[in-house]
Image (cartoon, rainbow, N blue to C red; front, side, top):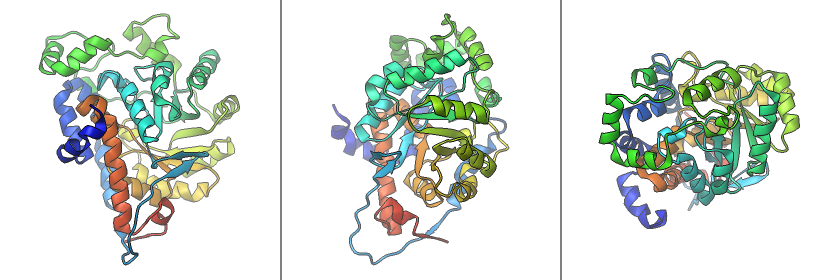
Length: 386
């Protein structure tokens, strides 16, 4: 059965991203949920990300006659159905087996971008078969120039056209909550783990069928598929090396748009433009890296001001509905991404989850545009805030 045939039923049962989250939490083991949902430290930034959105309120305008919202957006010369995409997430198969392929296929159907992480549990090649022309690739900067060259070539050969360099991982964060949940690399077979598997049979059956999640893209360079060895390789060989010279070098190596992800300081935005970046991705890594960071939406206006149209602005962190997308667009974002919400969808509904999450975001964005009195994305920015 296709998503279109199930759409009405799913819309009534799961009308919001929060409903998908509730279903996902019940359907997957605790360690999977905690990995997906966690931040770092006391995790106060997770709540602050969303609270900051709720402080942004519009003054709607009426008497404009019949409005039909058009959310189509052109970015780097490519037209998308709406300014929403799937943000890169690592160890994705832990949330749901083949989550990357499922969500990539949804993005192809909905004509929105899917950004694959270097630390995903599927390779650029296997996901590229499903994503069509909607593929972006997120690079964790390798220290080894040969690995860098290989990763870029693999992404190009697999059809990914937009490159995202991750800046905000100078070192791994603490992620205390995942440790308390029993997260380890490789996973340890404990009575607790056996119980979790038995009480979440659909996840367990699908996981056994598809294999224990592992960092498939990185395994290619280790000559060793032992998870502990691969995790050590990631910690020692990826990230922590980024400089403006490195960014410029990657820009020269990549034939297409290059975006720098994790920018929160206007000074860095200015330097990124000087380094030749085509896009600035404003993000606090979904509150997963530095609990003392500002909220991404609070950082956005100052970055918008210094960028001043010299590069495109991408945004994520705390986005949970179409109204949040509209708020970010109003404050200067050209495009918005979300991570957790789409993986809630995959964990909650399997093959239907990506389609349904995309549907929720796009329909909610269009509804809120009409409520504001905006027929186009450009008209959102002409509105007024309280």
